[in-house]
Length: 394
Image (tube, rainbow, N blue to C red):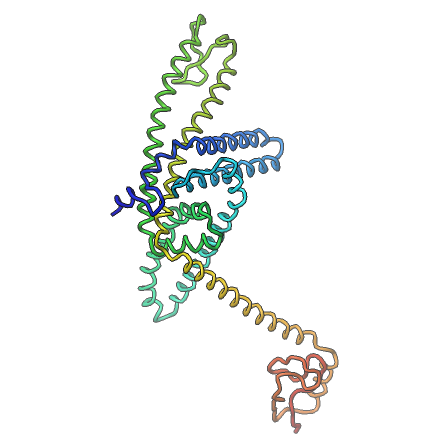
């Protein structure tokens, strides 16, 4: 069954094995490579400013993170186009779409984080109830295994479902609430399927990364050895740039010093290894897009979206009711605390008249004189000082 899902995709989409073709998308490779190189340059600039200004360092670090975020989402949108069976959009259009919609992904993840936090609070309250003497241990016998299963699935869903499928939902055009409802629906109904498919995607991307790593490593060894031999020239010495395999370039080789060759090798090697990371990254993005399309195939997304909206509306209504009750209670106690001095003096005269032998409430929710809200147990109105109870003196 799993092999069938890997070989075949949803209607109009590609299979997981087609994710390997992502390395042939030149525009996506250029976009993601430019993203990584730009982010590294900005991060290097931030490192250079570390001893000068902490504020500028943090600013450039945030810029580097933003470049990776928006550039990665732009490449993901191009991969989603291919997974849907369409030609990938141009680089400019992908970047503009990413800038205009990628903020939805941040909001989506924040909402899911809030849902997880509410779940933790509810679980903690349930465990607190288990402290009740007598019934507590019996209840805990059922709460413990249920908590282990539910919390384990929730934790495992974060790296296998939520993170991999949240971004493809936005790439496919979903809104923030729509993306949340889709991820929740997939996690509830197709968690195991998505877990297995994402493991397959990781395996495919890992194989591609391993093959590219072998190619780059072997080529690095040969190129470095030949470069070292040629660069030695008539100097007859090998004073290495770095110890070990890389050897060194002599001070007079190729018209430049060791520092110039080291800089050239660092720049060229950085671009090379960025490209090597780009290819398996594109394979993973393409595979995640295919898994997302497979996971939502046949699900009632409109129903899940409406259900989530109703839940959010009910939660908002409950919160407003609690807020109104809290404000009313605070207002009543504030009025009682600021009672006028006349009411206090009247209370003293009443106490001096004699002991109470009978008390009868006035029976009205508000003061009969000024209409102020009353607190149960008040003897005088906190607003006008009117006596609220009938008394008999001995």
